[in-house]
Image (spheres, rainbow, N blue to C red):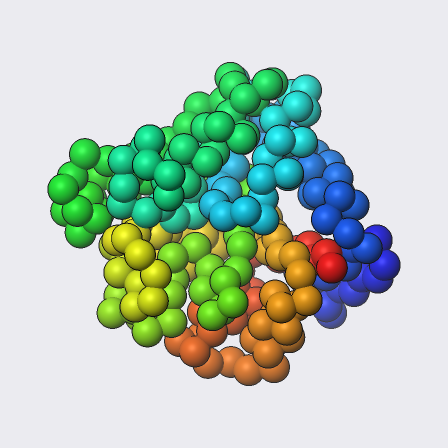
Length: 240
């Protein structure tokens, strides 16, 4: 780890690492600690993860950690509305890379259900995650366009997804510049967590992050809604 900083209210922790391996090791240690503590304190723990290439090594390392995985529930921050065996499915990614080794005993709650499209599947997706209550830890990524989960700039339902008073926990999204309908957890549901971690790698992502930190228009760069909130503790893990 190169450097870190904590904001005055102690809710933001920024950590920079020399390389991806160092980041992944530190992130695995942190998440394992959070899950273990939650199991000890309340008997269960929940982990919300994101898809993409960035978390793959982290998933593999986390899957090998020895803890009571049978008391951990895993779900997704967002999902493409495709079958679970589709190459673009986040569920497939998580099942093949995280829910293996020690972590095979964890329960998984998918966001994709049998509805024909994501709009029709909203109520079922909301119902499926309702029982989880406050999340133990939410791990988010960030796209080059500043999206997180499937809260995409320009999407028709973005305002609903960012509305802290909507009462919604999961909504359908159709990105303007990415394939597939999506189901995404809403901002208020993502923030209903004991800890949020933003996991990013590469100089390009650092540039987007720095731009996001300099403004407050959450519709331009939706990641700002995570960075600028004061609801849940946030840690940023970044590597070159």
